Image 1 (cartoon, rainbow, N blue to C red):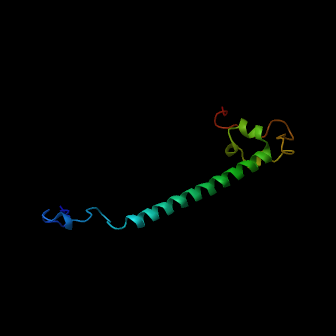
Image 2: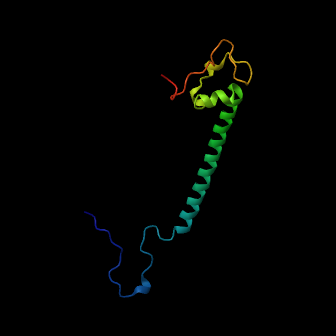
Image 3: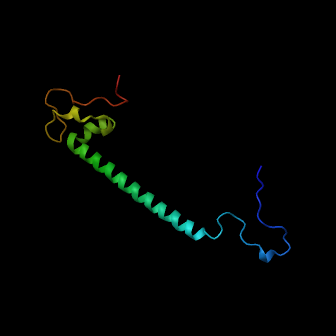
Length: 107
């Protein structure tokens, strides 16, 4: 068993006692690093969410908002299932809507 020591032998002279916690003196540096990481994380989140939003808008424009919403989002629609479409209205050449049912609709 390892004994942890503060390096103090007595409390006779309290003026000589300095900070008694790990990494004393690095508070400002650690705060700056923490804020930088926090700002970087938010920047990455904004970038990722913008990319996801742009993909969703492309899907909605490609196959129509009504069809996407009926199927539980564009993640349930494969690219090969919408090949027979004509325009952004979501019509399909040969019957049906050409989209697999989402998880809530499958039987």
